[in-house]
Length: 370
Image (cartoon, rainbow, N blue to C red; front, side):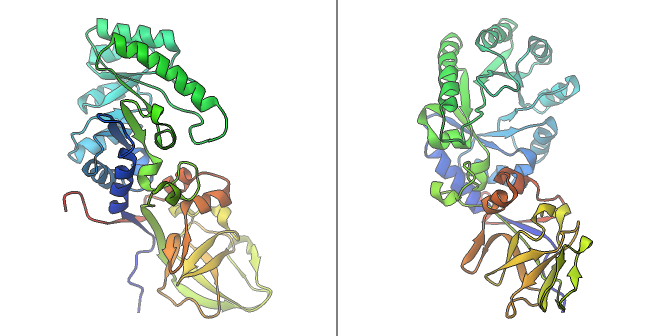
């Protein structure tokens, strides 16, 4: 009988998303807004379902990186304020205005275009990230140009470079600079929204929470510190799985996969799993990573292909059709996105975002309002 499973499946628990938003929102001062960051297809989880869950749990603003992402939310029926973080071309600016999305500004040239288009603007302060944004005096000059030109000055923002590093003083340096500038500008422009905190800053420092926080990674139950998320009462929202398409034995001297990078030195049971690097299982996990089958850890053997990989099965584990878990729990065992990230020398953000578009997303935990 053929397995009644998806070839590659990301099961997303919207109940976990709501729990995480509630957890983070409980830290905010009265009246502060919660921006749920759903860029990059909701960090691989699905922007529209996550946005729905986050808004139902108390988020009031949505954050994206591109105008296309903002348009996707509007097409799905969302009317919540939406902020586009990234740079925009002139054509994209017109689309952003049409989508009624706020934009970020850091140059006089862009402010002139945004004024002409009628955009709602957030001035970006470069407090130390060193990417986009301008220094204190330029922020104040841009704010004056926006208001004197009859434009909509909505916010002042910055972005932390080291909020997820608990050692060192640079985070405090950036925060102090931002708070000083925000104090001056809020006095000059009543109603201005000052916002700086990402997930890490929201969790670590009450001073950073301001008028709004912009939480991304923690919304998905992933740790801003790239450690066990349960330490911050966060619940991972995604489980990534496949199934055993076949089980066979290979004799000593036989190999599996491209390049013969695994050659058996004894009789070995192997399982073939129909998922690969095109689905987000990094090729660098070849002969290094583990999966879970029936509550047991099994090593990936051989080179991971685009669409398939092979695992070594203990003698008493694994039958065709059995579930194979890459991220999530099986029995008493679990593999976190953070575990995979540590093995690869990267961060959990990348593990989640790399889950491919052809991986089926299935949502559990109830849709908003259900």
